[in-house]
Length: 432
Image (cartoon, rainbow, N blue to C red):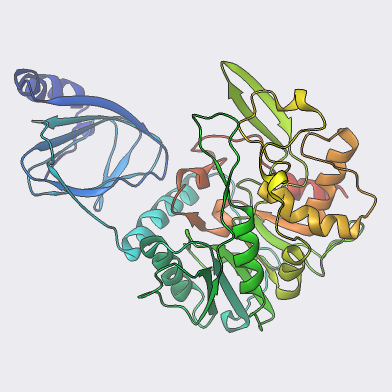
């Protein structure tokens, strides 16, 4: 591998076109293409058997090993070199392969330690460059031995193995319950207690034949409820089986805000993430953009809190009827124009509405299209009074399937204005 830090001479593009491009141009089998990657993108790890691969950084910065490459820097990997890179910012890269060969790649998996180190590198860089810091205020130091972590869902050995290793590292002494399906291979997975469930299956809920979308709500309900049934500690962290901890921060925010008052459902606030805790949902179809309201939509990727409260969140919901999971006939169909799902409610709404309707039996919300300004305001107050919404800097919980999504609203990645944010909640609480 050869790294050319040409940014210092500001000659990267010139060098490329003088020294590299003629070789690429003369090789008829060469391939070159510009790619744009989001902040936090971790490339595959692989080797090329017979080709040379070159990357020229056009915008942003990436990290290769311990070296940070900036605009105009270039790296050349020769056959047999291990290729991998991490985008510290959104990055625009020119990638060249000389020659382009079939079956030329040998891939390998990242270890958990490599993944943990890579994403903590990105977080640490953001902490140093972001104007706002997120310090724990009034946080309680909870002993991990008082916490049960329910890892729920399908077991992918690579992802779920990392999930459990991250818990062992950052919450040593916590009990780990793995709640999954009877047909899953759980060998080599380091759990403390195993709950094997009958798989209730998923239902196709896409509105368009060419777009397959599966509704997995019942799977979340079954695996979470049965996992929670085995919890006997004061606190519980419910985690999807494709999430990893990048720190122990989640438990440090437990007492950051006082318990709820007027719209109180739980004994104490439950801690959730910003990602998919929604106000609205923006989407496009056939060139037309749409924005719809999404009341009662707290994130369901993870939740931390008192065990009794986490149980309460999930104990007031039965398995969803097939007729509610797909091809549902909406109360206001004009609001679902171009909408790619056909469910009555999203998974997040299904789960939260169970406990909301128990506490507020007069609530009228027939399906996700059945909203008005008053109901949306009520939803906002209920969510802000019963949860503490943490951004990625605060919760440090990464989704291995959707890592770029975790960086939304970080100030350096993309902005998602549909989400409820920690900053918005803090402002709300200060004005009450």
